Image (cartoon, rainbow, N blue to C red; front, top):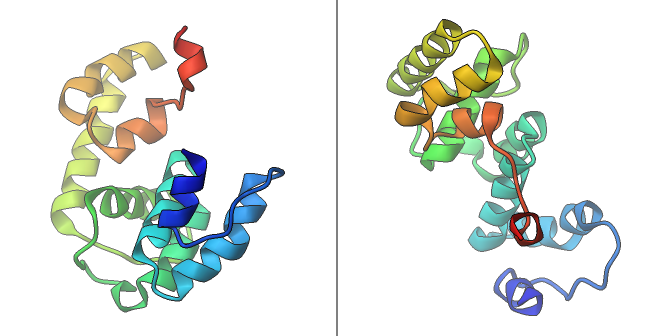
Length: 148
């Protein structure tokens, strides 16, 4: 239930309106004060929205010590930062993990082999369907109502 989520995030109940504004306010403040659950909830929400620029900016606030070299980050964060660095001309974050970068380049090479979007989606799913890169290019968020 929603009220349970807010309790776990140590946030006030959300009474409606724009969720983005809410998470930019009280939950973000809680995350900055060391609330690991709120921090990860916020960062994952940005990844689900495919907002790489905002993700990179906020990750810097929560993980300031991991500014440039490979650091211990959750897999999705590492994949997102690799994608961010590879697709931006002036990235804010200079994160580099040679293994992840090589895997991303292999993913991109495989994507280039197929012609249509559907062919690329299907070709890459077997090996990369579990990655953030695959989600970023081909994944969609669906609500339970969409499946009825």
